[in-house]
Length: 113
Image (tube, rainbow, N blue to C red; front, side, top):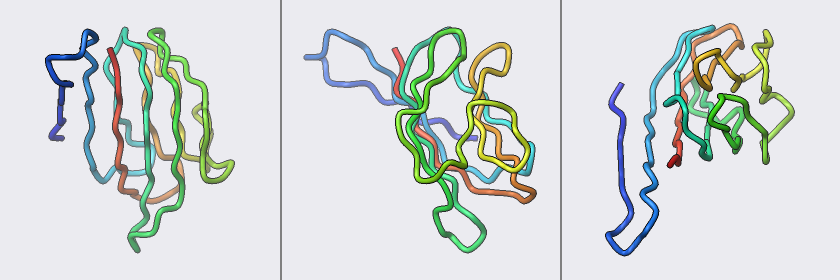
């Protein structure tokens, strides 16, 4: 995984990290986000035909819990639910976990402080 970390200009008083990647994840595979930080996760799930099957914005709290702000369909869940695209508290921080029965490409970007 090649994470990208960008910082705003020096004019900014707040140092917001933007971490992201695009990677293929097996069914039940996990992407673990940085722990102990609050931020906004933008996530897009892309199938083998390169079609977007789900996307969403999730606000992640420092404890790993999340709140869905918006999503394409109701297939983005805040729990580890089989048959869905999951973003949830994995115990040590938030995780992205596809549980849809096949590998899926995930494009994600986490804006955190």
